[in-house]
Length: 196
Image (cartoon, rainbow, N blue to C red; front, side, top):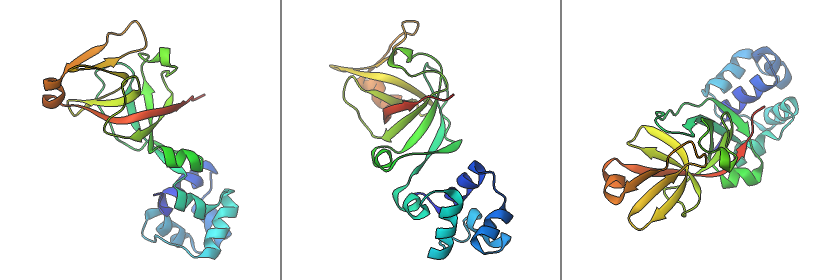
């Protein structure tokens, strides 16, 4: 669920507003706005929420209740050997329908999935899951620190991470390797957002 402090930081930066400008528009002091943004004050009354809605050109209550900002959690490799990072890089607005479908974005680096229209620099929208069907594109964590995006192929006792660029080899993991490394599916790719 989106928090007030996250929403304020995102929209203040998006609209290039100062704390003073928000304070003036909402009828509170600059220090109060600072306390909203730091998370010290977690709730505001309906009058202040309405003023913020007008200032940001959104329905603040709807954004807070429907979680219409999703985090860009970090970078995932469309290739291999990139260590997993989970730092919030930014937030992206989503529709109410998208909010119900997914959980977070990851930024892609590399070109191993270009045949699936996932390009270097794209944002992929991900639903947190522990498994996907064979043939679906997933985020996979290998050995606890390497994150990659690949098509999942399940055959007998093998898990295949399939690249969609012929310049990259597929990776094969046995049932034993899946347990001992481990190899974990942590998300299902829903779609990409192309960055310009």
